[in-house]
Image (cartoon, rainbow, N blue to C red):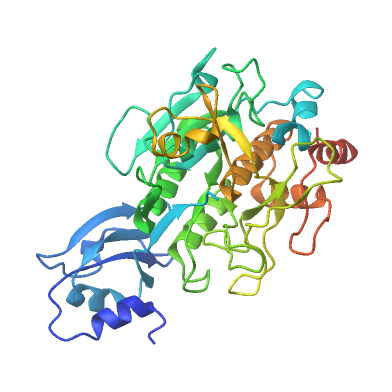
Length: 404
């Protein structure tokens, strides 16, 4: 097979008398001078370019066979991948990881750190808007709305695990970094499904607006089963671009179970990949076990993932009223404002909150150093996981290194 295209595109181009288009993501070489597809080839009337993504050097859209043949032969085109489907990774946590100690003893609450939650959107929940509004930005790649909303509820739950302050529960249900800011980037629909093209557009937007909003972290509680190496996967490559630009990318491992394939983008060896643990609703870690739903090593490229595991089982966080999850799971509601969910999605939100605290403590930290510190601070507790992040150990270690 041509190394520049995947099997879906190869099969498409081998058909006779092709009349329809194919949705694709075009990955360009880093030294390519343009992201305007019209400057790379002659477009046909049927072609429908969508996103020209300058920050990550990618183009998305729907193109005919003739155009795809031109593009795959262009020297500036690194790889062309079909636009696959992406979905949410859903299947007493803050105390169990030591967040209360970090918040109260060290005064670390995520202030000044913004996390871009690329997900189903974010509802203007009381825990994110009182006493001041910490949803400081919103972009909707699904319906084009300008006011924050979440018709599925998943993104709101994740945002709460990161930065909810417990205002509606007398601080009983608070996130890890209760003073961090949130930017909501909606790329998944009301059913929790979406496209590769919208997710990479969300990553590109977060990179382009990182200075405007102070974005230091991208949370990706979503994924898809990989069909190619991370080297050729547009989502993984977009995440690497964000990482190298200085944004910590935190991604879910997936919910395929032990020895299951790690999802993209979590299968990328560079970014921070999160597995889920079950803290059994207790603070001591001695009784914690791996979440039996969590995808684990190896990746399809043979890498050991996830990098760390944090609580992801029975996480009570923010509910978006009248959302799909709130309506489908009435038994999971906790009062009028909260919902209990399980999955590596929830663990990823918890981990992004940990990253926000670490970045507040040590603002100069690069993504690589954040990852190293978290892995160093992890306690090995199961053969299918690299470790378990313990915040008290993390901050004691930072004091040792004189980085606080």
